[in-house]
Image 1 (cartoon, rainbow, N blue to C red):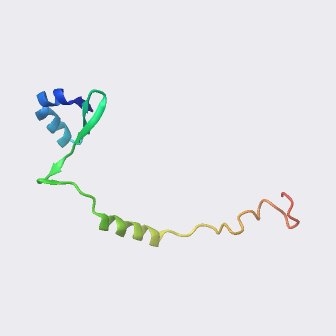
Image 2 (image 1 turned 45 degrees about the vertical axis):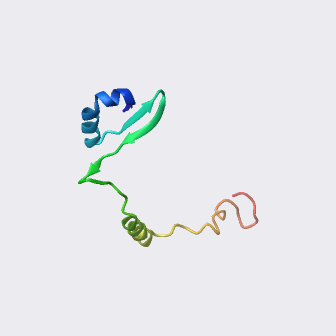
Image 3 (image 1 turned 45 degrees about the horizontal axis):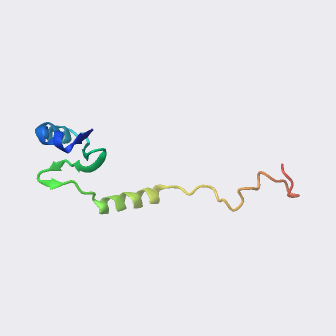
Length: 85
């Protein structure tokens, strides 16, 4: 939801409730977005746990099976004489 700064001053309590409920609130000046309200949990801003993301990526890579080799991917297109099959 986009709200002008002037309107946000009047509706701050409502906008805080909407943000807490997970809605994105963008503050605008004229037609230009200038700020976004963020949810704060337990007095701390949410952060991305980069170590957890790296661990998950490594786990996915370890479990992923390699696809077919592309080295001979055109073999099915051409016969033994190099002509289209």
